[in-house]
Image (tube, rainbow, N blue to C red; front, side, top):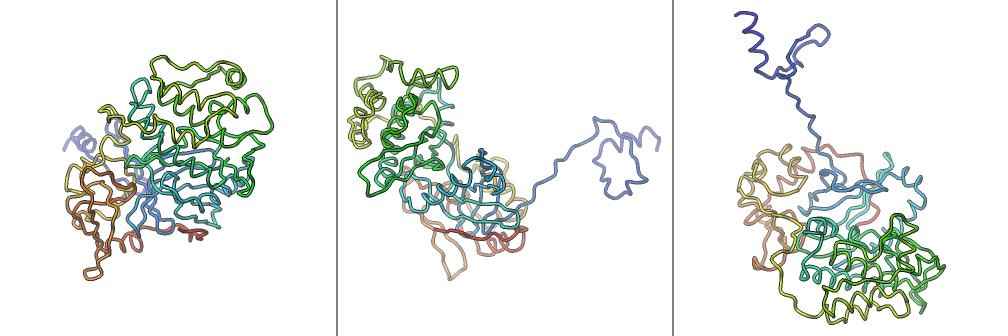
Length: 429
């Protein structure tokens, strides 16, 4: 074989250099013949949870998707380093406040805390929450001109009012209501999240006065923008709901400014301008929530009883879905390349258990609320009595007509995945 032929032969194949002693072996290759293979990530467990990829990041840490090997449920896991929290002013206090509140708040429109784990060796905290598909802000950003259809706005506003009403009934002021802190589950349920700056009032006090401002400037009311030391906490939340409502309707904010100083000046002193395109009910709703006088501003009960929240608005065909699709197109589960989903744990499951598809029939990323364990055959069977048209609860990674064997679960949790250092459980629902 000629030298040129040998070069072409080497260039046509991926060479495994691991078989050679790198000290003595040097292979000259053309850059066009080099195939870069990124290093594959190893699957890792924290407690009973298989970690997926990061799905969000904030000032306190990152959020990863997780898979509960006990319940076969998707979860969201906030991962925070305690050392970093101590460096952020109020960081530790805010996280402890949020965990304390979520432990006792139980409502369909409040994000559910499932568990809190600590890794003392790595000084990490893992806050396990129910999985949501995305933020309300993400849906707004996807809409044409960032304006949502009225039917979708009403659907979200009703749930937001119910959730905030529940908080106020428990003497909790959120203080940072905005689309970025409103999560949307797979079934369209709105979940209020991020209670880091929330204020818990004395439940026996008739007053709802708060004495410290917090939250995002664009969503702050005139009493905070003008620098008042004390203000009604419940009316602050109502104003923030009004700004969120205005933002869903128009894609803009009722008051804007080039910087925080001009923004606060406009919030405090500029008149509210409501677009003339809105009907009288929407106009009265906006005017009531965005009344600059907190004493005249709507209460959360006034808002809940407003006629616009009680009328029937035909469902628009232009509603923006949180998922474009969430169903597997093929029965070839983990090896299928036609999966339409953002489920980041799937590649890890495919890697550690490539033959897992043999235990699954007609897989989908639907959500099935009832999961029963059949002890006679050692399998989990997921069933549902709901029709296809009914909304399904979010979070469960499930399949149509399936039986996921305990052997698979045991393989995932005990054999295939290296566990991280033992996590100490602090709280579990």
